[in-house]
Amino acid sequence: MFTEYLMLERRSSEHTVKSYETDLVQFRDFICGNSNIQSCTEYFTDRNVRQWMMKLKEDGVSSRSINRKLSSLKAFATYLKKVGKIDSNPLAKIASQKTSKRLPEFVSESDMDKVTTADFFPEGFAGKRDEFMLELFYATGMRLSELINLRHLDFMPGERHVKVFGKRSKERIIPLNDYIINRYSDYVEQKKLQGFDVSSQAWLLVTDKGAKMYDKFVYRKVTHYLGEVTSIDKKSPHVLRHTFATLMLNNGADLNAIKELLGHASLSATQVYTHNTFEKLKTVYKQAHPRA
Image 1 (spheres, rainbow, N blue to C red):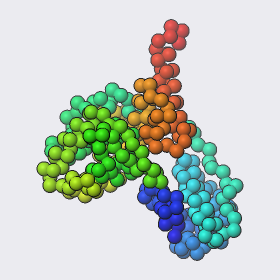
Image 2 (image 1 turned 45 degrees about the horizontal axis):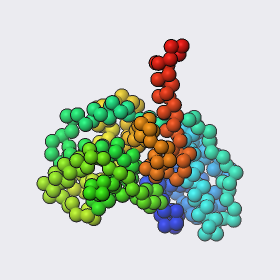
Image 3 (image 1 turned 90 degrees about the vertical axis):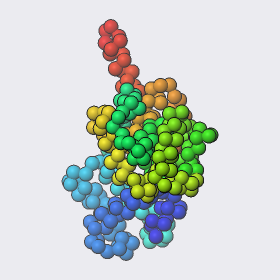
Image 4 (image 1 turned 90 degrees about the horizontal axis):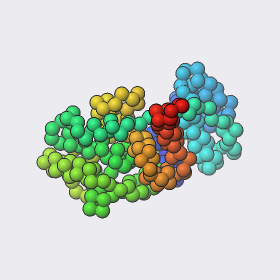
């Protein structure tokens, strides 16, 4: 099974597996209706893939999204060749769409400071959890999928670090500051009062009913609270990851150190944040230089 190949051999995240499955279903519907995708591999040709990409473009799908879907098909082609369903990769010569380079959006340091003095968090468990969750993103730069899969044993206030399992189950350690450790203590106290499990194997972040946190819940909360402090267009957990990286770089952190903290496989993925830093330098230059 393709999904087993993704999880066991490529060690893809649950989110990635779901995205790949969705893309394959869309492609299957386009080339062979409701048939099982693995029973119609004769339609898995470069011509059909190009036609599908053209159809997506006509439907207004962005180049960035088309490239993601193409990555899903390329992974599937690799799997088919591996299990002997096809002799050669039909997508080997299909190039990705050109995309415009967008600077990562981030929340300013002054806007993030507003969160620490905000009175928009509700009283009790829900408020302490929401505040801790928002600050945890800001303090660590971790991904949404990494946050919702944290257990209590992963958050180590005594050692002042949190253990995160990133893409392909790669483990990394992220330092913790005093502020987030204090927010953790407040949250755990309220969690106990609710009668929720705080043992080492229990999920760190839970819903109002004590169940494991899930993507849409976190996304909705972060979007709501960021809307209280910033006017930027995008408001999401990933924007807080961008915020962490950009502000660390702006305040003098080494790019390689940020790469390790973010769990990037290569430095090129981290270098995008240098563009934000350069934009800041240009602004300072325009404000300070007498001939600017």
